[in-house]
Amino acid sequence: MKRKTVVDIIAYLFIVLFIYASVNKLIDYENFSAELGKSPLLTAFARWVAWGIPAIELVVVVLLTVPKWALVGFYAAFSLMTMFTAYIIAILKFSDFIPCSCGGVLQSMNWDQHLVFNIFFIVLGFIGILLYEADDHKTVKVQPVAA
Image (cartoon, rainbow, N blue to C red; front, side):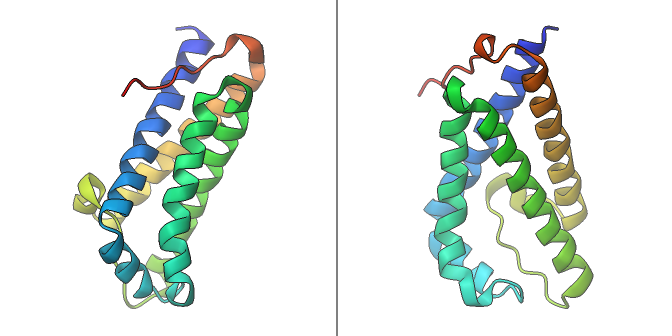
């Protein structure tokens, strides 16, 4: 498989993940915000985080669909997944109460499964960055997902 194809597949996976996750959070904003408010790490910032996370996820989607900004999108996706994973680890390790702020399919996962899921996407992001940087940037063009 060509590098470009692998990079495109990874970008599409992130696009689907972040569109799904952000739309789910925005549709169920009240519940998402309330659950974040129960988090011992985010209580004071729950309202800001409840809007900020879906907004950032959608910005990452746009970055990944614009060829000129795709590498920035990969770095942003990698960073976002790393932060989500660090948050999960911190909650699991240091909190007596574990809030559930995920929605949709992700809500059916237990925390260990969610951690593995996130690590999988961190690895994908890292591979995407390496392959994108190794390839000629002008040849890698992620096409927007058709509506």
